[in-house]
Length: 135
Image (cartoon, rainbow, N blue to C red; front, side):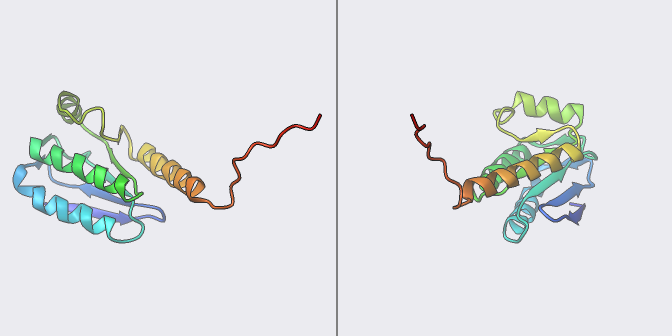
């Protein structure tokens, strides 16, 4: 599988250069996503703009990878899906679960918003108690 990696401050962008993702690429794709999750920053934007077809096993692996990222407080966003990939995704059982965006820029925005959300939720100095009003 051919791809380009572009590290950013809060995430890594991986651009798949192959036009087809077949089931024999699942082990390599799994290794690639696991390697991103194992280092910092562990958020991933997967750009599939060059991909025009994928095997159902690849789609299943991507759904599993996304779940693994979110279980580890990391973001996983797929962007730039072709019409045929969108149709495949919509027809699959993962269509409503996968985090996808039309553009890479929108994927960056989602990762950054989720990162801010995690920082706010993990903050110990936030006080959510309600003060009683003085009469």
